[in-house]
Length: 102
Image 1: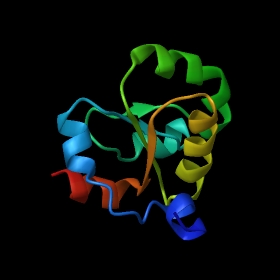
Image 2: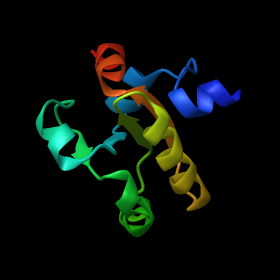
Image 3: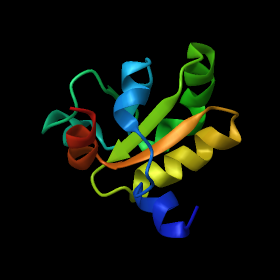
């Protein structure tokens, strides 16, 4: 996977199938950004809390899809979660991800 795909979530992942199978969407933007608009059912866990939240996500046992405003922060969050042993996918920008899962 190229660096652009890792950072901005441009892979050919079938996000709709992942969500239909129970994947958790984690929006890593700030609470203020999340409040201004987000994917219904997504969970807000700001990037700076990702290390401390990884155990909680791992216990859930479900794949995780990260998203943010542009895909950069979600790519960083995905790397943190991957290192914690979580099946994770960078969904990129939340607006684009929302269109992919509808």
